[in-house]
Length: 71
Image (cartoon, rainbow, N blue to C red):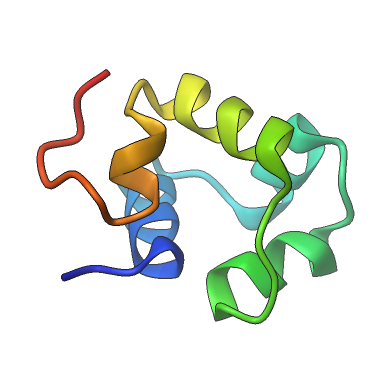
């Protein structure tokens, strides 16, 4: 099963976005976002909701609890 870090990276690459783009959207530093994709840190609940809304997927999908990326 894919982990959070793998899912957000794949979603970002599918949309041809830079880490910088998502960091700006989440209002965090690029380094903080890089920690998400490295699996070192995780967003707070508000950040998780923003990512789910941006990519139009469920929070469960991002967390690896749901396989199809639907809302």
